[in-house]
Amino acid sequence: AQKITQTQPGMFVQEKEAVTLDCTYDTSDQSYGLFWYKQPSSGEMIFLIYQGSYDEQNATEGRYSLNFQKARKSANLVISASQLGDSAMYFCAMREGPGGGADGLTFGKGTHLIIQP
Amino acid sequence: DTEVTQTPKHLVMGMTNKKSLKCEQHMGHRAMYWYKQKAKKPPELMFVYSYEKLSINESVPSRFSPECPNSSLLNLHLHALQPEDSALYLCASSQETVAGGPGETQYFGPGTRLLVL
Picture (tube, each protein chain N blue to C red):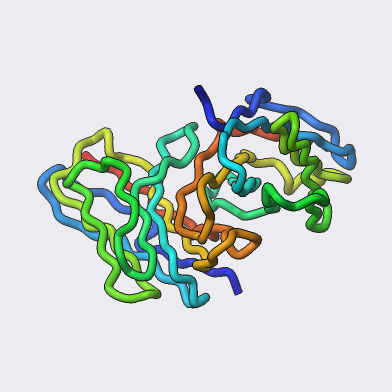
């Protein structure tokens, strides 16, 4: 079974609209971390936002927010007021286990977001 | 500063060559990672170093040999590779924390695009 599921292979959105990218995860661990990364065509993985499993409030970073619904095992990324530069591949990822910074990430298959003018 | 550098940016090698990929970070992070990303796929974890010791090896073939000379440097030595090893190789680093939190965020370098002929 997939640990991270991103159900939207591709999305077209009009500039300045809000975007929601879906992510569901599967883990039996109580402690885990959830991440969103942006990967432009250049290849670099750019960190966007982090949510810990014990965090009660949804994470926010500028135009990015994470809609964390723990009971549903869902961690959707919301981008407000989309810009042309937001066009990229977006990956949801999870760190399982006790934490400590030395566990690898498991990535979803990604969503290719294209912002149209 | 969340910069991770990788050299070279591009590498073409024959199946009998020996080459090395280099990764460097100066953020004081104690965990470093190698990921492999095939075209149109998510990254897959290869190796994890924690406090300069190999802590995770995801059943990677022995033609890939990691090395961590010090806490800032991570190398990946390549020998007798196959054409199917052609991919984007990403290095990442994170703080070594005990209980997770934002310090577990992995920051990625720009990657090395490897082509094996």
